[in-house]
Image (cartoon, rainbow, N blue to C red; front, side, top):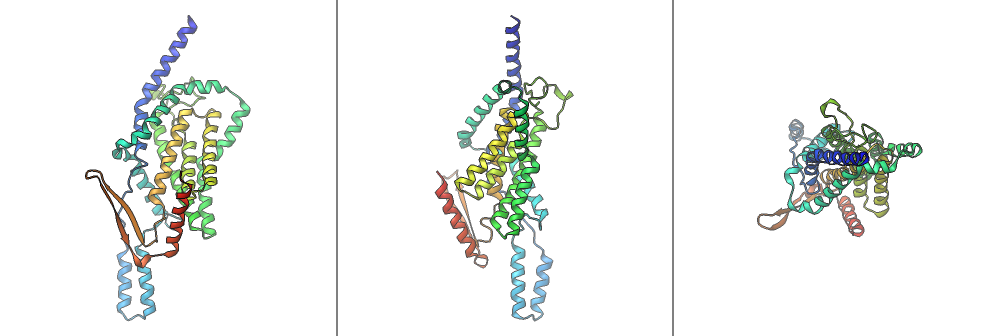
Length: 354
């Protein structure tokens, strides 16, 4: 009888824990639901009018044709938007701020079609939440496995993922490989965005880790009397590794690269569970969040169309069931080399897409 009553109490505690965490989980779903479909945010940038006035004064003062051409080239380059990098660290901060604004306001852009993937994801996460404690109990405690898992998961830490992205960026700069440098730049931005979002959710959920408390992974298990700054939900390692993997797989859309990138992220995520640092639902939600944020950063900050001399933006009007496109042509900025590179990338993506 005592065994049955304890078992029943365990079930009641499990149901109460899930019910208490559902409002916060629903908030998380609203945050990520529109990341795939959210449109780019437009932000105006100011130009240095004093520099343009100075160039105009030099042209009027009787400069030779070569100096006129040089001043025109400088004026055109000054009109191009700054790209995040070592020379424009301020732009990096602006980009991250714009990302955070777009991510946290994404629930306002949820559409009914999101239910196609949102419902299965919510169902899978709910099942994972229910069996989290049981999964960790079935794993048991194996010191050798835990030590090995901690070593593997170390490669998914913020220091490792940011260091890897920075390495790609500086390697691209050193070898004059703009594509590689962009991959590193976008990867670092995606990792930082994931880190900020995950830390905010950890503070909001305050979930105990598998090796804390009674091992049940309660959300606010002791109310405000016990507060963890580094909670369990969601997994930061999973989010950051999947964010970096998504950027690399998007920038280099070949099967070997994609398999290697996502295998790395999956290994990091699994090691967080086997190291008893996270529950399965933590890594499921964290990995999904990082994957979506990585795609968001690529879509909004990729320099694929920069310097092409034209821009093609699809336009859809759901109220009238019509669609079209806005085409911005800039012949003075046309770069045939980049146009050819862009066409080749589109062709490569079409070949690897299912």
